[in-house]
Length: 393
Ligand SMILES: *[C@@H]1O[C@H](CO)[C@@H](O)[C@H](O)[C@H]1NC(C)=O
Ligand SMILES: *[C@@H]1O[C@H](CO)[C@@H](O)[C@H](O)[C@H]1NC(C)=O
Ligand SMILES: *[C@@H]1O[C@H](CO)[C@@H](O)[C@H](O)[C@H]1NC(C)=O
Image (tube, rainbow, N blue to C red; front, side, top):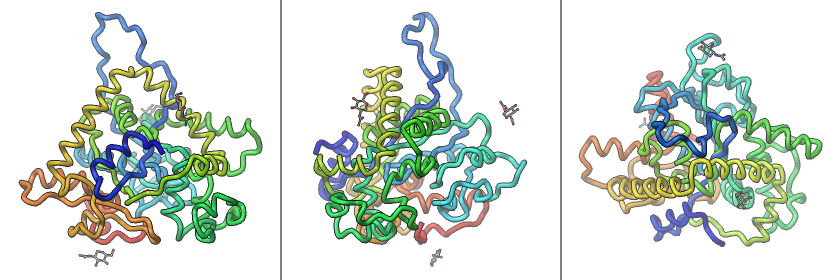
């Protein structure tokens, strides 16, 4: 199977472990004229100045590489003293739809928050209660032909449909044999993206599917593609008017040795997750339209700089220059949460002997999402977990 470029690079980083990361990301929703660069701007006009955006909602979807995006949002928000809308624990009542009351410190009429980026089932009217009206909404999606494999490995212990199947092959041969709609935990087993976006669970016909997808395009200014993670980060940086360094992040929540699917298995996963496939195919087209407006050569150049920057940070910060097994990370603040089951999640250990300021910067790049949430919680509220032993999230 031909791996996306991000995966190939990560495999180089972690060749010894045969790592590839479950990455995923970006889509465009506001096809508004202000989002597009005019194809033939008068040469004399200086580039439009832009102001970095600081009101952000990132819908963190499952098994799409979204943890890596959360890391850069955590770092940006912390560095700029922004207020996060945080869950009391680690998710906003997932899989129930998001409710404003789930946000720690929220009260109606109280000051709005700057960034909301933890797991939720999306519910726009409730999100709007918490966030300012000029908020930039974005998310990330991944081809269900590979997302399904990642979900199977990760949620084996939680989704009854996966637990009952002796293997992924058996599940794919006849998923209906194992799947009971509505059973607790089974949202992980079919159309997980559709579920996370909060879309209607059983759209009656193609028109209803198209209407739901159009609603996503309206609500979200950008949707990233997991398979084109670095291109996604560049388009995100551009849309947010951020600096190139702001989107240089390590891949988080990657798995050791993910399985490779045959083309037939990927096709079966797409068919089983037909709603996700409809959503993904649409958002993929929007993404590439946006990439084209940005400029293919410009995109390539900036992706190259991003990779160079990330590689330099990895060499400077990380023991071994890449991800390592959780068991090899002595510092509990950097050890990633391990899901129940057999998927082994990798993390990062810092190089010995870094000067204190650099050590701090490297630690932030390497901090897993649960521990980072604890850091932000303490900064905002003086309470929260101790950052050493994240409970099952
Ligand atoms: C957005 O919020 C700001 C500040 O609360 C307010 O002044 C402005 O009128 C609002 N704009 C819209 C379109 O609701
Ligand atoms: C995504 O869109 C691009 C450009 O339109 C197209 O070449 C590619 O085949 C699409 N991928 C999928 C999986 O639909
Ligand atoms: C951190 O909190 C967890 C419970 O969330 C507890 O089990 C652990 O002992 C605590 N660690 C320290 C060092 O206080």
